[in-house]
Image (cartoon, rainbow, N blue to C red):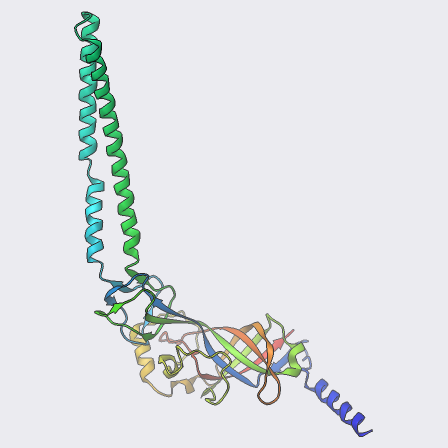
Length: 338
């Protein structure tokens, strides 16, 4: 009897824990923990080994724009080789010479054939045949000169493509979170020089009670609210990011106005943001809306069983161009299931 009563209480407790629909038919599922993580962080490296002549920026926390040249290797030798090939490819001397030779050979042949028509036997068949061979030879030289010019053009284009390997452009709009190397240093192929993080969309990782598993689906909307404090440093980190732990983003403040203006940040904006402590508290109460992208197919083993829910959250900037949502900022979250 006691066992049956205990089972009944357990079932009732489980049913009670399931989010009840509100007046709009939506279920609001609260998260036990919400941690903000960087969704996209890219280490930038060169495709070939060499000596760095240009790295920009050389300070962490600076902004880069897609297409900006951020890394350049010493390319003096290949620039000289390219200039040499371009000059040769642009030259028409060989083609002009071959055209003149062909015209001269054709003129000689025409004179001989005309003379033989007026006075047969003036030129022997051997001489006529030799004149025709000279015409064919001149035509072949012209074709060869034209082909060589085309090949030189292709070689120059190959050098231009090769030259592109000496520079690296920023693939995203983002913040430099780590400067690994500086001008004057030698780097190997694949050595990271800069690490850039895209903060336009961040990831929220939610810990949600297992009993709500049936009340959450991919695509559900998620409401997030800033607490104005840093995230709990003792909370588990479902998505560890060794590239940013302790880096510039862990020191970033939040920002002021929540107006969703387009980012117009300058390097000075981010340098200033990194230097002013306690700005994250100004985020208190700011709301963001994200969307569930996937639910991790396993349960956490610490404490009561929980599921991990991943949410993509579009970020905003303040009126000085600083991103509001940064890794480590404290948030609360509610999943809205329709």
